[in-house]
Length: 193
Image (cartoon, rainbow, N blue to C red; front, side, top):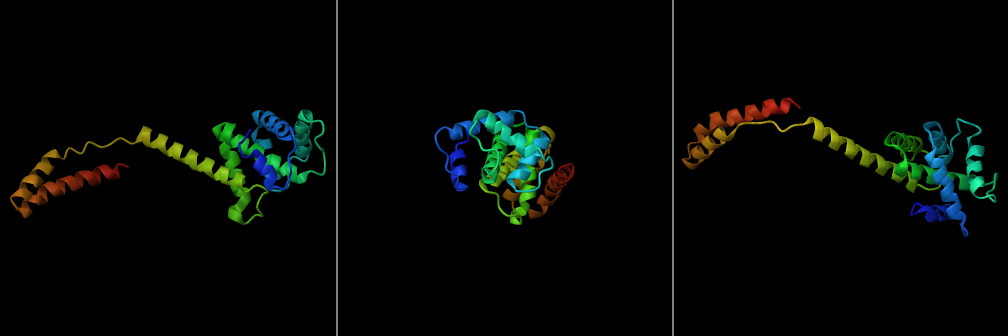
């Protein structure tokens, strides 16, 4: 169970009682393990209170919870369904494949429109999506840097030695040729990137 799941219920002014949270989380995990991109996008729509693409999705989603908890209401619980959709999205960010989790995060941020859309019942879920994308971006940059960029062999030791000797003798004009060679070498290697 996500460590903030109970808090998400409270933020939405829902009062979880007894085993209710356990039942709900079991259903979230069950759904999360079988989620595909179409269902994930409808979860985002439900969470952000946008029209669903699949009209039967909400009933199918409720059935998952009712199978775990027979007392689960099948209507009149729109706010709870949005909270559960958000919790399922959070589960997906933590457990789905990178491709699906990335799509879920991008969909949430797109639907949120940088605050232009009314906030969802649990704004923290949007923050989790942002954190997920930041983490994934860093991972991708790291893998690209590690694989494709190699430090150039500048071979500037001789020029540095000449500069050192010229500096010790205060012969400033003699620094020109080795400095020019070093700068040209650096410039040529920077252009490669």
